[in-house]
Image (cartoon, rainbow, N blue to C red; front, side):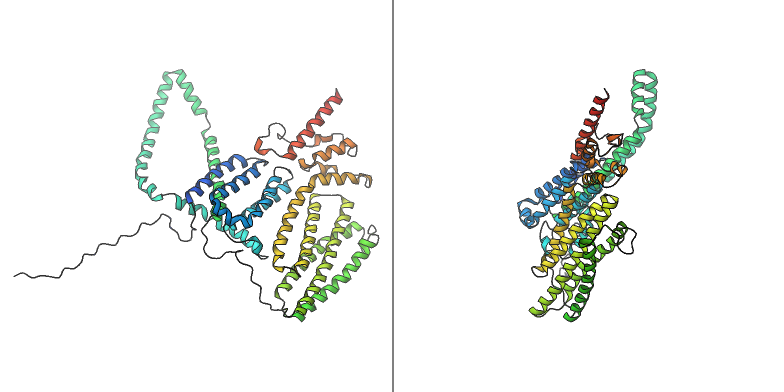
Length: 518
């Protein structure tokens, strides 16, 4: 008797889909990961060749150009179309990078490198979408810092998407026997090499030459260069990967900053504005009467000298000016202004506050001028002068945007900051310091020559003119200036216009001294 049983389908064991090595969801997805990784490694090698030096010159702008060119090449035509609204950032980026090959002042070099890094991070963030003009006041630091931190995720993501680590794991067992073979061969080779060296003098000499190589130093240099290439490649991968990433959702700068919900009544805001206006008006009256109309060369009441008056009040005025700018911005953002009349009254009161603040800035500039006339010009004072002029420009722009396009204040302030960086490069502070201090010779009995000799190669042509005109009379002349090996064998990546001109001036001075001695 046969019995039949219903057949049950045989279920196959589920197969797990192959998983990527290091498949971590928090790592970003990359576009063209292998090309990007290869470009980053190439830039890392180039950075090691150009930037691993005591001095930077044309190497820095060349490195920036290479990074931008790689970004444009990887993004292609479609990427450039998306990036074009923010391509104006390339102009100040290339300008401040180029000044690294023009100026020698360490202050300017640090400022230019920092500015170039900030512009690169902004460019990377806005390469695929968004506009810089749409950022709010705090959007710029958020984008710069956010791009720097999020960029750190891209090097491991590029490695994950480009390198098949599972294949390396499969071939790992075959590497272990090879390593054991090397360990077995080393002592055998040592014994045979010792015996063969005893048998032949020429061979022994060749072996000694091999052993005389400082393997430790060679290995140390190799490791250091490998670390340098790896670090530079990681930085390049961060910038390229962040610029070419696959975007998820809206990011900073892709939409206009929404207006804040007003929380302060118009009466309260006007009371505060008019009270500050009255205080500033009284202070401005004293400042104009003493600094701009009266005799500012005589000490103010309560001060031993006008220099002490200028020095003690300057930074307080600077802080007041910056706090006032913040106050006007906060009131413009949080004050309720329902009717056209309310808006006009608020704008008029805030404009008066800004105008009186400009008088305070002018007072601070005048005090700094008095301080310089008394004690001379230094880097800190020149840079502070430029900063105050930029602050005055930002305040004036704030007054304009109270009446027209208020959402464009932030980008105008950003452009003013870039303008200040370019302006301080153009005026060449070290050369200006020498020229203005030498001009004081007729008014003061002594010029601080020692400080002038500590300035960078930017000041060399002005120092030479000072000695040639007889206004500087130190017997050693330009022999005070120490250029090191810069004039003897300067590698081409370290070439810098100011250092080259300084070397030309020193060579001409040595020729003049030797001709005079003969």
